[in-house]
Structures are given as C-alpha cells and as structure tokens.
Image (cartoon, rainbow over all chains, first blue to last red; front, side):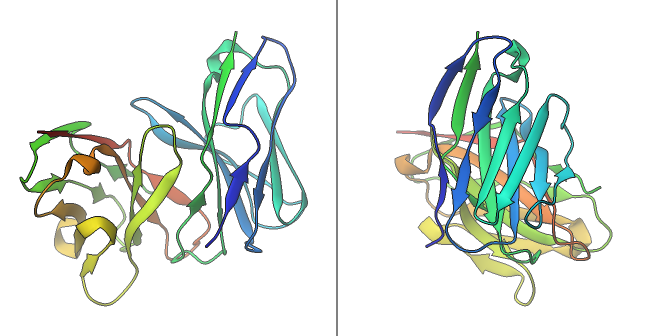
Length: 113
Length: 114
C-alpha cells in the first residue's frame, strides 16, 4: 500500500512565523500535490510537482512556496503565516498517469493565531 | 479547466435507505472520474474510479457509480446505508490529455439517521 506521511497532525503557529509542512511518500511516485481544504470550498490546489526540483502553481499559490529536493519529499512553506491560512492541509501523490488516483496523507490541521 | 459539481452539500438518509450522491463534470471529452471518502480528521480515501470500459464501477464498502456520458454524470450509490457511511464524499476528475491535475467538487456531507 502506498503511504503518504505528513509530519504533523496538528500545528499551532503565530502570525508572521515561517511554517514548514512536510510530506513523504514511499512509492516512488512522480507527482506530488499540496491542497488546502476549507468548509464549503472543497479541496483547492496550492502547488504541485511532477519531478524533483520542479514545481507548478496551482489555483491558490499566494503566500505559499514549495520545495522538492528529493523525489519522496515535498515541503510546503508559509513564508509569513497569517490567520487566513488557518486550514486543513492535505498532501497527495500519484504515479503521474491521469488514470491513477491520488493517494492522500492524513492531513495537517494548521491554526494561525 | 475542468469543473466538478456536486449537487447537495449535505445529504441525510435513514439507515438501510438508498444513498445517492450526485456528481457532474463540465468537460466535453470524458475525463477520468473518481470518488473519494473522508472520515473526520483523516485524509481522503479512494472509493472507486472510472477510466475506461464498463460504465458501472464497483468500489469498496458496497458503493458503486455509473458513468453516463450523455448526462456528463458520475453519481455514487449504495443500496443500503450503514451508520459507518457517515462521512464527507468528494467527486474528482483528471483530464485524459494532461493527466497531471485533478479537479475536485466541493464535497457532500452524508449523515445517516438511525
């Protein structure tokens, strides 16, 4: 079974802090994704990566950056956390073929105070 | 970009009743289609997918979905609801041409009444 592991289940940070959310997958998947989930809005794509050191902006990249130095790890960075970034963050991976589903981590619930 | 519409953000059914969750997509070229389930404080888990072939697909936990090209729909059903089916359900599509991006509906929260 594919395992996607997010380093934290719950995080509380202060406004202005730099925040790192880490995600690791163990199935040698090409593609990795970061989504945020908010009530009534579903999942919105922040960034995705289809190869090491490659990244593409999703629908809501503002205020975020990403890093993919190794194939198995995809990090989401909040340069200066703000209260409107309080949300559930979901990492996912896929083999890179569109008919293969996404595999999700358990999510990180981030609260910015 | 694709768009995915899930009609009804909240659906309530009695235990033992039919579950029907609706999903429509916007593309003129049928995409790959997926249903996911999310239990509280967890990530999304794949229920089933349609990529090609038979239009009625069966998934885990007794769920199934039927792809109808003429209606651009992929509705999720289960003949008899269990209490354990209470969760959030998401429909998603992936473009056949690019394959790298997935588009999600806004989700349907299913409540099962004992």
